[in-house]
Amino acid sequence: MEVIWNEFMYELNKRNKKVCVIKVKILIGQPKLETDLEQLEEEIKNNPSVDLILYPEGYVQETKLEKVSQLAKTFQTTIVTGYKDKHNFDRALIISNEGKIIFERAKTPENNELYTPSTAKDNESTYGYLLCREVFQGLQGLKNEKSLDLIFNPIGVGMFSKDQYTEWSGEAKRISIKQKAWVLGTSHADGSYRNCGFSIPIAYCFDEKGRDILLSKDDTRTRIVDTMTKTVDIIGNLIKTK
Image (cartoon, rainbow, N blue to C red):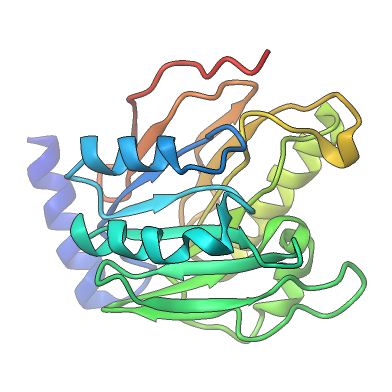
């Protein structure tokens, strides 16, 4: 009965166009910093029902872009992440389920206005993209965008304090309310800010009304978020980082 009701509300909202309506299953992963894409390959193969995979900033090396594109095409799954270019600089990346790069750009410097483009069209969906700390440039940088469905925030490493986690997730929530769009973020399971030696891995998800669907800290299990039922399934085990 609940599923039928959700389907009914989905179609009603879609016709009325009062709120963001998006019907996808999104895998949110928190892999270790790795060079061989082992966790991505495993998770994309083992979860054929997923429409989109969200992975952290800098997970992919430039030399692996072709391989990631092939994975996206083979398993018909959109991949949102970030990659390191040949100079080891972080860049934004979205690859469609056809294996095509539909979004790619440099990371915005900390004191600049958000780089454009920061949106991408993927079939009937429109995405926003905020690379790591660009989340703090998102309220202003995306203010003129009126029809975003999902906003992604791939994060390099975890938080260096609980206060930073609260500030970061709070900013994401404000963006979701302002944009009436889902906002989702994830970090690596390991690594630390400027190699400080302390890190709190995080993953989060707010719906189009700013309600927290997922708030995870120091828990590196993989999740699948269903935007229609607004539920979260845990599919992975804790990743050992020490």
